[in-house]
Image 1 (tube, rainbow, N blue to C red):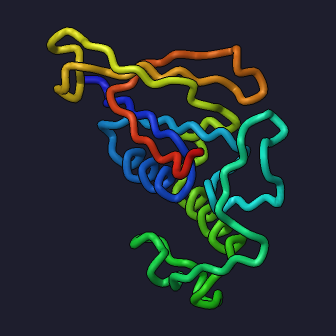
Image 2: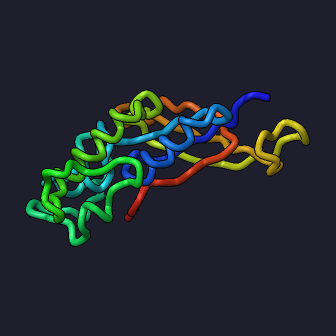
Length: 168
């Protein structure tokens, strides 16, 4: 039996966690899509508002001097702690650094297509025995580079996990 192909949309905290846990299981083949240049999702603060250099909306609930209202000891993934020299209430830069370190530590970057937008996700029925998840359908995920959104690629996945956070 071939591996179960899973698409993950977004490389923020939830997307990275999903990629990490799927990638460590041999029955899964995981591909994440992230439209920005790096991991972090909402923690990748920018002073820009409106649209980015590729014309895509900038989604952020951060502000320049933000500190978390939740201690890092509670925010950390169970198997990867924040640097213990940091204060309990960390800045958005420190959270982003943590997510970048987490990605490097668990070799997650190899599973992420950066600067790639997911254009559409459509289910389609498959014949009995073709579906590796037993659900009777698979997913067509169409993506495109953010720099050339007309250059789309459509791939088939057994499952899709949406970790794209807030959308407007």
